[in-house]
Amino acid sequence: MIKIQNLKIYNFLNELVKVSPIVKYKKNTIILENDSIIENIYYIHSGEVKVRRENKIVKILNEGEIFGEIGLFNQIESLYEYFVDYDCSIIIISYSNIFLYLGDKYIQNFI
Image (cartoon, rainbow, N blue to C red; front, top):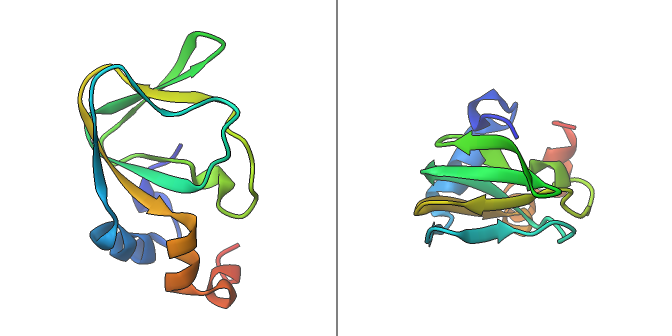
């Protein structure tokens, strides 16, 4: 859970953000469930996302922050539940689009 501007590959992700869908989530919606496979990077376009583990809020993410980046190079399950209390817009950047756009060879330079 980091700010996208702090990533080495910010410029490339910024290009992907421009062509990725913006999904509007209504209040009380779960975006990513605990134990589900992470397949996207989620960029918070507006609003906030709460992160919960074992029914306890452990973090609140705000506009401009991302989550899901942990699964980019390793297919893993989420340890947390990500949800919204209020309407929120999130840009969903699929891992497959990242690899198509940058290519596996180019990505390896940033690991």
